[in-house]
Image 1 (cartoon, rainbow, N blue to C red):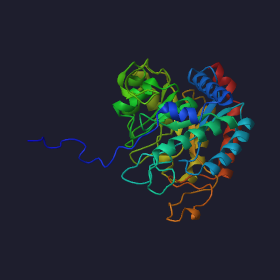
Image 2: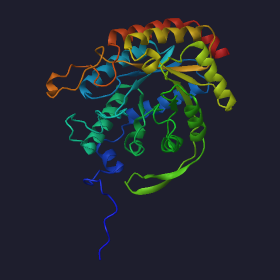
Image 3: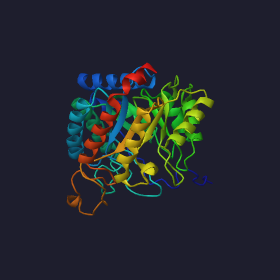
Image 4: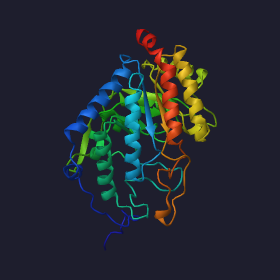
Length: 358
């Protein structure tokens, strides 16, 4: 008598996915892009080591859905980055994977055509090509690592990585972070707790062994060395912001208790802006004044920004999409972004030398 089927009962299909090696061969890393990636990582490490007094700012769309508009944004950002290079290091936010609270579009890799065709194989190649283009423009790129396999496909094009509020407590993501080649920011939990982020940094700083894939797409035991450049990202939570001086001081104490370097990034969006993008400039100004008044633990900022303000639902007719407008979280527009960056640069200009001496 045959055995009853006991596995894959809810699996509809196994479709072939090209290996990381195949995707990289189609979209190879150029010398120009490699130089931008390495310089970006080294600069961020110097900031986290408190050897470079500048602030890094991860700024860009909530998510990438239109590569044409995305590269339009990148070219604008590169000009702005050059303008404020004496005070700030701008890293373009390039998010392809979107964790959803329940359901919704899960990002450019998962569904690049936004039509529920879920051509992940094509989305991965498109995402890698977009990252290559951003780096060749001269901008380092930052992203959120959500799928633990995805970094094998495009990790060589990333300078900064975030572990999101929903995954900072995940053992899988802590293990992955321990092997990433970039500095990694762990966000506080959606309830506002710092414990998951602090414990995530501690865990990721140690060596781990876990299951994953290699460049050939083979199932492998991945053995990591640990990542020394973990840091906290304050994004608010539990119905309140946590960028104020008291919250920053509490974060410093939590890091000191764990014997970790006081490195804090403030996310100007999400719960810190009450999910209203028009408050992001106020958050950034407040944080800039904390730095001017002597704070040395805040090393970075995050902004959700796009060409157009706000956001839009994904229409059935994709030709109706507004150019340069987010399809996920609402963003500030380009004019507001320029003003935020320039204003903050002016506030910081006179105090960075003292910060370096400290």
